[in-house]
Image 1: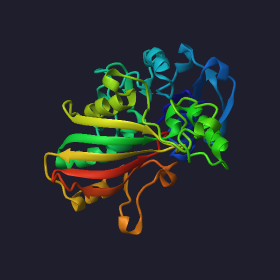
Image 2 (image 1 turned 180 degrees about the vertical axis):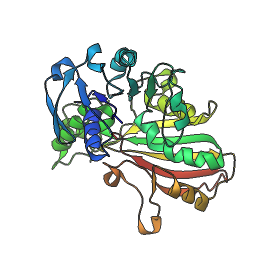
Image 3 (image 1 turned 45 degrees about the horizontal axis):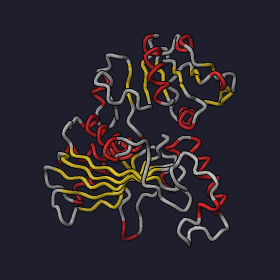
Length: 329
């Protein structure tokens, strides 16, 4: 049987680079792998599966003969080019936010709603935002047993969520404050950090209570993504969700604290057993011995990592937990 061909669109970006690394690590299920990027990146040589591949410029013809096209590009690029790729016969898997809330595009997390993948009238499948994805696999497993009713979450989002510029900016800021006494007087780090980069305030030695763009009523786009995408993935259009998204000085791996309220009363042991056996979830929950997931231990791995599972003291129908996931994988 002929192996399907794959196009990676945005192969030279932060997520695209990780995608090539993952393709090299995983079982070889693909035939031709075609790397596609902007015209300025065309001609670059990149390694994938031990082969040197030449990047080709984004064009309609670049999708000829392609079975699956994975898009790792900004929303506006996906909005224009994903339909073109689909029209050329490719099944598009899009990592951007361009189609997530489109009723004719399934928003898929394989461990949660794989049955929806067949319903793709536009030939496009969307992936959730990395913040949503970091928690939704674990919550999907718990929802199947306990019937999720409400979520209150706070995210601790890595610099790489802002792209390569976020990574580069945080590394430069760390260099600028290293060896100084910054962080001892209000605002003193601003004297050392010359450029905030894509963040609204210095990120090194700091946390910034903002990720994304401004939306109605003071919410950020990231916070609304968590709400709206969770509802769609879980098939719960009336799920109550309150999210606060915070940027932290971590290179890669998002974390979240989650307060989840259910219709059926959960138990701590029952929840731990569910998570222990859930596909795509790694439970590390031994606080007595200081064992719980942290970004430093999770980065570069695929699962959703869960720890600090507790039954809420004041609400017998609720669980609290801490969740980590590499946001580039």
